[in-house]
Image (cartoon, rainbow, N blue to C red):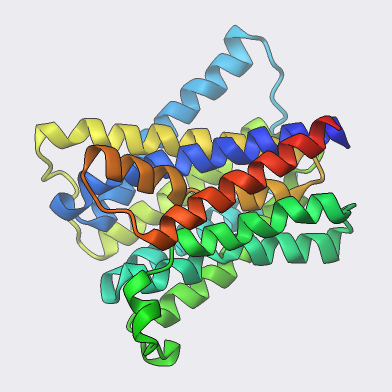
Length: 301
């Protein structure tokens, strides 16, 4: 249990840092090139980077990749890629319609619900100390994504919030994807599966951009490096969580920690983009760190 928890913590932190850094770099270009174009190029670069990783694994390090042979596995990989692409597209569409500060905590709740369903459906072994780490993580995630002014006005009616429908659907799909992906790759050689899923996701986003007639090549030279960094950081996140889901049964820990990706984004935006941190976000960050410390202490007991 202790070793498994350590792996889950490392994998979850990898997902947190990967997606958090990806969101930070996306902030640098998304207003200039648009959300769909950012998604297209970030995932194209990510696919290329992931191909190099797979090439290294299979050729240079002589790791034998397990390529699916059955049509059933390929259909599932296609399903996972399309489903994750749908999550991205719905989230960006929702954020484009409404206030990110109001909608973000709704989407961030997927990690908490994933943890709850994982404990119920997969029968994770938990105790009081384990819950003492998970509960602060979930509470902290909600707080760092919560808008302080929206809380003070107390006038949020979710059914009337622009973008709520898209974010709510994306949240449900994110829960389904996480639980299903965990179940699919648990105990598997996850390297090629992650690559295939990511390729299908990239193709789906690219096709969507073509249907919407987005001009994906009108990008300034100074923006390419940020698109590359977004893709690279995303690969770190996907490799980390896939590793965690594959070799551990602690889906709740990986899901919750990786779901705290707003934490590094907020800190980096404050340090380098001079964005303000609200009191609720400071409290949320402290609570998340406390939860990580409790889980880490429990793993070595």
